[in-house]
Image 1 (cartoon, helix red, strand yellow):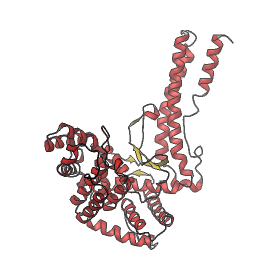
Image 2: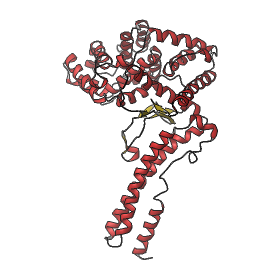
Image 3: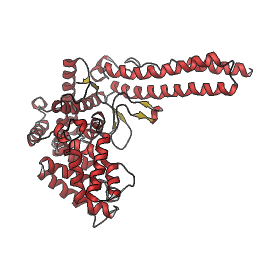
Image 4: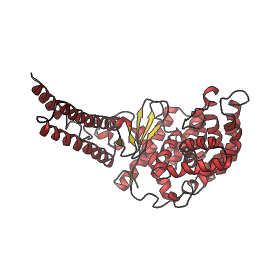
Amino acid sequence: MDTTAFLRAKIVGLAARARRLARIDPDQIGIRRKDLPYAPSPAHLKAANARLAHIEADVLRRVQHLHQHWRSASREQVLVDIAMVERELDRARRTYGLFFEVFAQRGTTFAPALAAHDVIAADCYAAVRQRAHHIFDKPLLKPISYMEHGFSPATMRRGVTLGRLLGEANPFPLIRIPWDREHPWQAVFLHEVAHNLQADLGIWQENGHAVARRMLEASHSIGLAQVYGRWHKEIFADLAALLLGGPAAAWSMSDFLAYPAPRTMTYRPRGVHPTSYLRVLIVTEMLRRMGFGRDAQQLESVWKSLYNPARFHRLPPLLLLSSPRTIPEVVDEIAFQTRRNLGQRALADILHFSAADEARIRRASSLLVQGLADAVELPPRQLVAAASYALGTGAIAPQQLSGIVIGKLNEEGQAVSRATRLQLVA
């Protein structure tokens, strides 16, 4: 085989792979008839295929260029052109693989739990629309949940470019659930949904600038302003989770953050997550502002009994000593100050949680313990809170509770789907 024949064979093999990953459908991902209630919606499949079709067009354009010019080009240029085709094929492979992994899980035993989390996420968006009509100028594809290894839940926002996809934009929010956290009483899931809300509401940058400015005015410290400016996204998600799920979300997040003091009391330079010790104090301040002073006092008492800076800490002195002053400031700025992109309303205006909501959640918790799911009437985001309280009683087996709540959430989701005929966040 001479060099020309070698290059020709390489190009033929390359072209043979060009159309392999251009489309994904229910048959490919193993969705059976019994899986349909939990399957990705046609709109999600359409969005995924639109992204794959866009990449395929780039692949075919480069393959065509290669076929037309490889004989007349230098060998070095041919190798470069081949590499450019390979780059687009890699993009297709990664994008197809992500969608396949996410969607194929809807044909497994985890499908009902994942679909239940989709319902919770969609309800969080519905809560915003209920109090802020027309805040979104068009229908939005709801977040899709999937399971993966990892210490904590995480999210990939709509439209964000993903390094794992070589810069391809994510067409709809994806929320990762660790394999051992599939039960729908984990209020940290509300935190991940809140990240997507912040992005879709268009207040990501506005919040960041406002927090940094407020902290500079309150502390006269550029260093503190920079720290809270880095933390603003995670603080927003924590506070929004409380407005979605109430005090149960605060307790759940504190449970998630409770580790030995060297972890909880150590400041991470350039980290985007607040130091856990201060993070829970931020949450308790939010509870007070929401009118749940008793819960705030109880949680703060528990937290400070576990973690005492006088015993141990690795926090910058200024960060720790200023916290009684800066924490109320940052909570007020993020949750209670108006934003242009919210129509000159605050986060607490478009997401509202009242004492009456908490009373209904407590009653629902008792009904869940008794196995009386049919008597529970709560929006899905608050059902998470009721389930967490029910679990905490120790009076119902975790698997039994999980089955009840997952069934309830899927009934709700399928009813909404039948009513709208589209699984969009309407």
